Image (tube, rainbow, N blue to C red; front, side, top):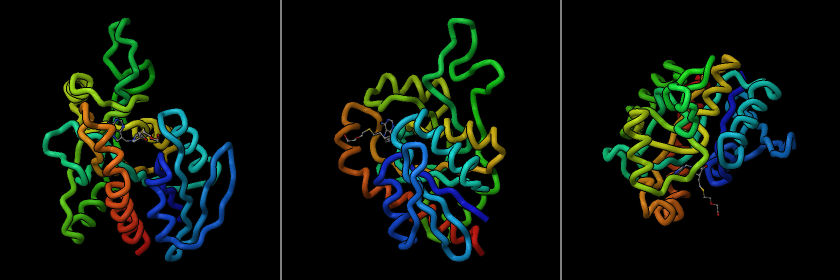
Length: 230
Ligand code: 3QA
């Protein structure tokens, strides 16, 4: 089995590379991919760079070029739900693109013809995550994640996204990764640890908590890999 572990920023995959210790670096399409063998399974690890376009490229490469059969995303997110505080973990049940807008033609936000507003994540992987959370004694929230090419640092924008998509958290890569995996029939899982509240203090909070929250998420994802292996 080959499993892809993806992040958007170097900080999001650093704890994973630390854990696998030995890996081979492959350059492809302007990015670095790290191949490792871990407890008998093959891993391909990469950060895409920020946003929907780069994450689409990386997710596609991991699945279509490297042949990953499952994709686990690990990273940080801005909270929309007041139940999510810095460091808390959220797993996406489904994802939407909050900045995809042809509403001028009467279509709902996030929708384009032949697409869908939401892409659903793999239920088995979410089930596995619940087991992991229980074993670790860590609270894990489930919810809708909204994705767009925008670092949201504005209460009004955040509330609009929350209301329009019933979203609990927001980030910049999940929904594009979801579209790729759905199209290529690769089960996927998007996990995020909260780094900020997407409000006027978001950039400061993000800078302060990026590393620690990225570690929270990465540790959980590696526990998922351990479970998938046995
Ligand atoms: C944005 C990162 C991108 O990969 C999405 C973090 C956390 N809080 C968010 C928010 N709005 C949107 N997304 C997020 N990730 C970081 S840009 C700063 C880069 O600094 C999730 C996320 N409020 C680089 C150094 O200058």
